[in-house]
Image 1 (cartoon, rainbow, N blue to C red):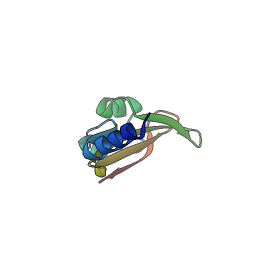
Image 2 (image 1 turned 135 degrees about the vertical axis):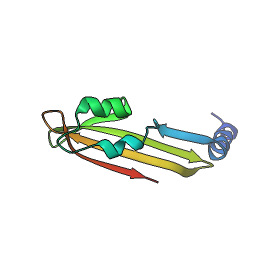
Image 3 (image 1 turned 90 degrees about the vertical axis):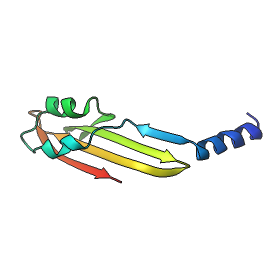
Length: 97
C-alpha cells in the first residue's frame, strides 16, 4: 500500500469515530450482590460478555466499551465479574469515564 493510502487512512481515523467492545447498560450494576447474584442473571442484565477467562481458577466475564472521537477517548466503561464455583458472583468491579 502506498504512503498516500496510509496517510488517508490515518486522517480518516483521526477525524472519525471508532468503538471497541459493545455498549452495555450501567443501571443493573446496582443490583449485583456478591454470593447472591447468579451467572444467568448477569447474562440477563448484560448479555454475552466481551471476553471470558479464568482468574486463579474462577470464571471471569468482562464487559467492555470504549468510544473514540477525533482520536480522543470520549466514553469508556468496563465491568469485570468473577464467579464462584456455584455460579454466583464472587466479586466485581466497574469503571467508567
